[in-house]
Image (tube, rainbow, N blue to C red):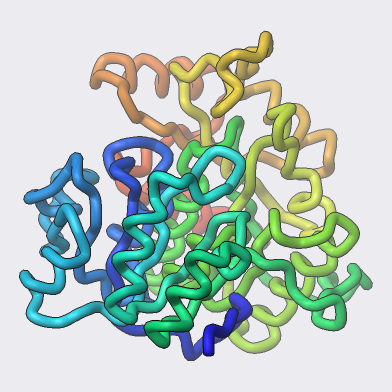
Length: 364
């Protein structure tokens, strides 16, 4: 019998491949990119992407070999590895969060091998009879992890965040799909490597898929419960782990009209500081390129953050599609005008941000 598993399930782990719908080399496969970089929940054994086939996924992503082969089909992956993965993860975003018909054959082939599907799209696959019937026939499970929690498991904000006695830092951005989670994850790892006990709060499905222990899926949560779910995740993390630093993964951006977000993190999470991620050469909001609104200067977001009662501690730069000269000039310009440290996480590493946080810890 096919079942649907709620997302908060620590038992969900094992070998997995990633389905990217031939989008691995695009911004739309950011879930896949995160899992290729790191996953403590799943052992990633391959990627299904016809356009990028016969290469290593790490080398395609950032030039770093990770022994994750890219194949054209699940059959080829099984033949190469000698066995089937336990799970197949849908690793890309689609328009409207709906599974396009073009992916039905790929999903069907996976299910025909009895491989469970982990689905982070908005559309539950369990509601597609063609796929749910096939899953049942092959004793595969459809895990629709973006389904909202049952009402009785949701939390209202009640003020217990005041008991959380550690540095609480939000990694926010000037747009969607700008690398907030990647920066949060890299910084969390760097802090722990530097001997500073740090925990990350995930707010999207990819963070959970990577194995982050505490958090909630922001856009699968009814609006009235977002402050409470954020507070509960942060409080639970503090109570159980007692970290010195807590990093909260931001969502969307403060001024993106298609997804204004960030004030909840600052106000309900009682943040001590913000690291603001920006893409200097991106002019229009992600997926709203047709809309007559341009991304404002990052310093406008710094002002908004201040008005919300918080300080920006550093700016981070997404360098996708930028030349070395552009990166250098943009960092110098932002640093001069803001007076803040400016770091490019994927170029500079996280040492600069670790030092910023160390100084803040001394002041506290």
